[in-house]
Amino acid sequence: MTRLIFLGPPGAGKGTQAQNLAYECNIPHISTGDILRQAMKEQTLLGIKAQNYVDSGELVPDQLVEELVQERLNQPDTKSGWILDGFPRKVTQAVFLQELLQKMHVPNGEKVVNLDVPDDVVVARLLERGRKDDTEEVIRRRLDVYRNETAPLIDYYGAKQQLVIVNGNQSQEEVTNELKKVIAF
Image (cartoon, rainbow, N blue to C red; front, side, top):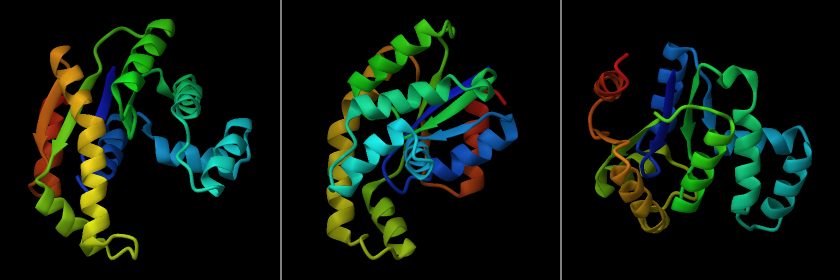
């Protein structure tokens, strides 16, 4: 059973790599951003709640994101494994996830992959995407927020011997090959 949690700064390639591996392993790629957008589009109860926060320009609260993740992990296609992308973002969410998996009687053993990419490379990649909200200043601010929120998470999973660091500053194919080694594909 393959269960992976992807960490890494914006622009590290988490989504691309998660999609590729999920396809090859025949398991779902669970992106919290995608779950959120889908729930809002389908106007589910949680989606309507989330929409209210999004419409007012606020972050969706942790509890709501946790409920969405719990709902998604309880779907039948997750029985043979999954790749989580964008969750957890903080230690409190990691603890929630651990407790949730215990309640679901899922054995310990998920690996946490940190795609490590230098800030300058991330900035260059995100500027290349050409999104109008991606200015260098905004990108560097997002990186600061990411580092502040996620650094404790890296320590948390490192202490639990679950963390694997993968160099994300190489070609897409090289990163994919390194990830396959990590999960003993």
